Image 1 (cartoon, helix red, strand yellow):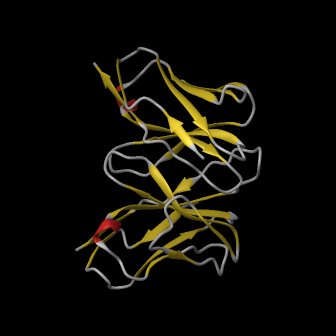
Image 2 (cartoon, each protein chain N blue to C red):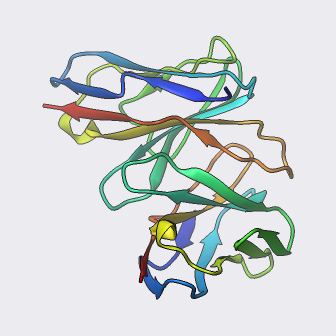
Length: 108
Length: 115
């Protein structure tokens, strides 16, 4: 079967660094995606890891270890606008499984 | 402008009255998918389509139907809606090339209430 775990809530202060972990179990794994969703809005794509290692996109980085079925999203230099929900999503050939998401609250 | 559109954005209906939520994308994407999102929860995949005339069940397909007659459109059909289908629905599309970015572009969402 499929399972997905990520923390439900994380709180950090402006300027800090936060890491959101994701462990998954899924068949037919292609890669791990991360999405951001602000309250009431549509999810937007942040990053995708098909191979092991770190991918960096500006203030955001994402890491994948296929052997450990583990990934994380690293957000640096946190800003108030980063307050949102973050979803990891293991991707298969057709199926996408989104976790329940991590609500990040950035405080001044 | 590259986008995914959904209609209607808001809908209040009654139990048993058939409805269709339309989804259209202008990016020539092969892959399209429907999700529902309930309060405090993530997105659960209802159905997806790898290409025209190819559809498959996601994790929560019961009570829903889809069709993919054209590449750009992927309507979601509720033949006999029930109150437990009250939810926020998102349509998404992507190129879906294995090993590539696989970025899914989401529509703005349809908030459905079934009384």
